[in-house]
Length: 212
Image (tube, rainbow, N blue to C red; front, side):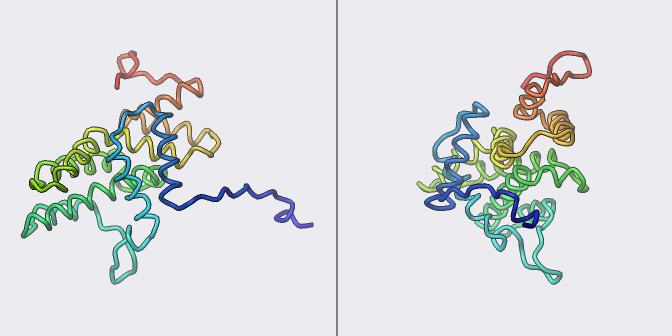
């Protein structure tokens, strides 16, 4: 019998839908990180994750194939937008992509030109600007509260998505170092919690525990 056939595969758990799976995972991650989140905001992020589960929704078509547009390019497009709707749509896309990438691809970003703190800065700023520019329709008033909360709790939401991604992954020395780097750059409360759980108590340069 080959090594592959001897290896026991993880048991697959059926779910009602991808959206239901994300909702259940997010509820657990929110509880683990002790974050208070409005139901409308949770619903928005669950829908975002369900949408971006399809690569064609996350990546954009280019002559060289599917790719992510640089965040700075999206911001420039929002600034130069010819209409309110075009500006708002681009800001929303900027915030959504930043949140998804920082939440699910933080480890990949450590080798990129910009790290996760850049995505946190750009994404939180995009949601904040969007909340200020929305109109006064019923739908826009409802969304304004969502974007205000996402802007204020962007790092917390990144922690939630990190929790969802890493809930089944074992701790390694590399993960420990990455958690310390994330804590140092973003002040992530989740990273600090995981460090303490591993027996590492991060200190500020002054020797005092960092406050969040």
